[in-house]
Length: 218
Image 1: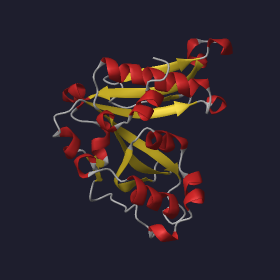
Image 2 (image 1 turned 30 degrees about the horizontal axis):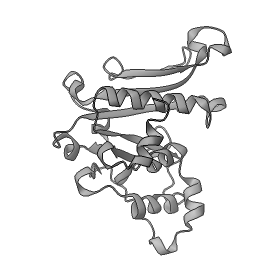
Image 3 (image 1 turned 90 degrees about the vertical axis):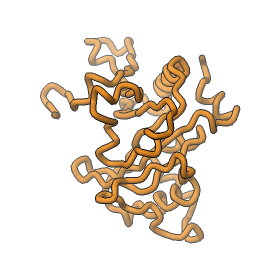
């Protein structure tokens, strides 16, 4: 469902997700041309309209679905390359915090991607995530067995941790700074030329410093 001429990418979940957009009106042009950031959000109470979460196609989400807690799936996070690392990300995360607080969301989750599908080239950062940031059992979502690729590709003692962390995408680092975790296993998406990892953030496990970062500006 990609229309390159119209610059659109969509799927059957879009009508049910909420869509958070960041505009820079100083860019001029049409409203569409002013969009510099996007996030899409699916509160758990809406999955009856979709038949499940988007992530169900790659991951076994039963540990979250059976938790009885209020869930929010995040996806399609993207910032225009000229706005990365600046105020646009601040506004996106501030409004995401407001959204979750208003709806009393307890667990946020979604996937983030490494570029490329060469697992050997990604062995160090994937292994670092496994050894240092694996989710506790009550949050440990696992890649579906037919797609599962282990994150633990090398022993922790052999990892150059500084170099490995440089390979970790900014979005994953942001979740880790907030006290987030990764799930068990990677998903190799050859269609999009990415290697995906599962991210989960339990707001009850955030300490005050992390909570202050997340809700900064509210």
